[in-house]
Length: 320
Image 1: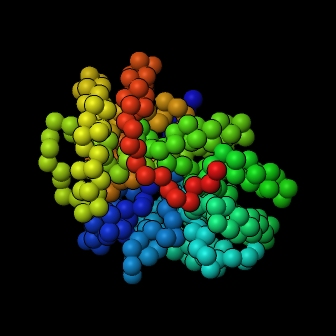
Image 2: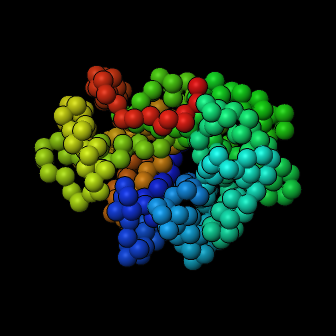
């Protein structure tokens, strides 16, 4: 199995959850450059990333960074975005304008277009029409692969069959996947289907908003947003044993706690999409490519994960 890493960019432009400031853009560029140098194979963004007037900021930043990058380096990495199926984006042309706007923000660098979440719980026909729209754009000469996000195993099979009728193949599926993710049994069913059809299985939030990186021997939380502080405080005690185990493995291997949590995803064949905002974080996570969890380490982490009754909230739009 070839281990792969992806770079997530939800925090790029997000003030509410990640305290984004435009003054940090130079640091984000350095992070991006290091991702290209360190073997990251996938950069993931979305047209909805960025709060308030900064809506679309993640794509804009990435597009600017790509403009400053030599073609030989760009060719080594896939650029992916997610289009949000907002209620007003309906019909077989609902994604045409959003796609073109994303393409423009990304400076015409776009390899994968993903449906950001499933509409099957409230409007099952909407997502099928939007996927039909993406197929039609492909047929008109726009070159990109099709992906999904926040999908369950039942709907995934239906969409694979739907796309097959258009002679299209699903390229990737991303779901919330970590030691603290909800519905892990369901996510593993999704992964099994992905394996059957040779679809890349992507793990978003593999560090659970940074909670899995929190040192269990230190009570103080760093400079984070009000929302992240709330999450850290809410799950501090219930995750203590798990974080102690992560720290013990990290110390034994002379790696970071974050690397251990990411390698738990890699051990199962997932491609983690790690949200990173500075060069040092990225260099550290790249160390994951140099080592693997042992079976006993993996089993220990799995056992402690199962013992945590209250997992992180699930995305309300995830389909069955």
